[in-house]
Length: 509
Image 1 (cartoon, helix red, strand yellow):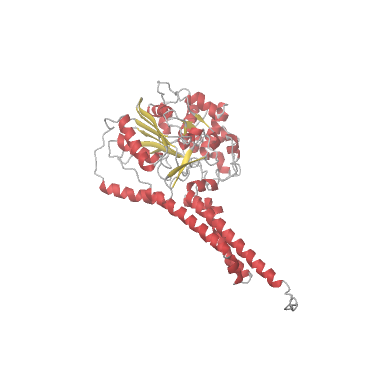
Image 2: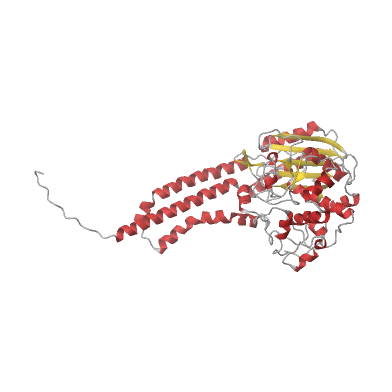
C-alpha cells in the first residue's frame, strides 16, 4: 500500500505558486483570534462543498473537534462504488497511520517494555542490515525518521512484493544506511514498518490485533483497523485518478504499507483520535490510553528537523503552533492537524489522488476558517485539465503519424539500401520505449530519490504515460515495418531474373 508518494508534479507546483502570489498580493491582513467564534457544521460544510465544487474530488470525509467536543463529522460525495460517503464510511488514512504506530510504541514505553533510546535490535533481533551502523539505530530514531535509512539505499516499493511486517523487515538485510543514525532526517516509510514489527514481537500480537485491543477499542473506534497491502482496501476505500477533469475509479497499485500507511478509519473514528491527541492521551470517555508525557514526546520535534514521533511540527500562516501530518496513497489523500492554541483538531480523507486537489489543501482552508482568516478560494484545475487534453490530443496525433509511417514503409525502403547506417537511423524510434520503461527512475530522480515503482509512476502521470505507450508502440511498428520492407527488397534483388521466351501468336488463333 503506497503511502506519501510524490504528491505534486511540476504542473501543480507552478500553478499553486502563481495562485499564491496573486492571493498574497490581494490579501488584507486580518487579526487572528485564539479560535474563531461561530465555527459550526454549516460553515465547515460551506468550505468543503466549495472546495469540492472546484476541484471535482468525488468523495471526502471530514472530522473537526474542539477540545473534547466533536464539532462536526460528515461525508460528502460518493465512493468508487457509487455509494454516498458518510462519517461511517471506511477510508484509507495513508501516512496518518504513522502517528498511530508511534502511539502504539509509546504505550510500550509507558509500560516499561521498550526504551525510546535503546537500540531497536535489542527488542527486534531480526532487524539486521548490511551495515554495522544499523545496530545503533534506536527506537526513537525509527519514529523521528533519523535512523539513516533511505529510499536511495533501500527500494521498498520498486523491489520485490512484500506481504507481512516480518517479510518487510527481512527484506532490509541487504540494505545499507545513507547516513549515521541520529544525524539526518529523511522521510522513509520502512522506519515505521520496523517499528510496527517491533510492536508485534514485544506484545506477542499481530499489529492489527494490538491496535484493535489497545488503541481502537478503548477509544471507541469501532470501524478502524490496519492492513498489510493495497489488497486490504475495502471497496469504500478505493480511490480515483483525475484525468481530463473526470474522476476515474482505479484499484490502488500494489504496495506494502502496514505500520507506515495501512490504517483504515472513518470520520467518526478519527474524531475520537483527534480528541485523544488534544486531551493528553485521554479518549472521548476519559479513558487514558497513553501518558501525557508520551503525548508531549510525540508532539515535540527532533533536533535534526521538524518531525516529531509520527507528526510534523510547525506553524500556521498566522504563526500559531501546528501539529500535522499529510498522507497519500496514489489514488487517495488524507490530512490531520492539531491546533494546540485553540484546541481544534481536523481529519480529512479524500478518495482521489493529488492531481487536481487533495486533503491537505482542503485542510489548509479549514484551518483558515478555524483561525478566523479569509478562506482562500480553491485553485481551479482547469489548466491541469487542459494539459491532460493536450497530451491526449498528442497521443492521437502520434497514432496518425505511426499509421502513416507504417503504410509508407514500402516507399521508404525503395529509396534506401539496407546498411548498418540505415538501421542506425531507425534506432531513435526506440527512444519512447526506453523512456517508458525507465520513467519511474526519472520520477524518483525528480523527487530527490524517493522510491517509486513503475506502476505508481504511471498512475502519477496517466496521460503522459498514455502518450509514451502510444509513442513507443508506434515507434516499434514503424521500425519493424521499415526493416521488413527493406529486407524484402534485398531478397527480391538477390533472386535470379529469368527471361521467358515469347511464343508468336497466330492471327487466326
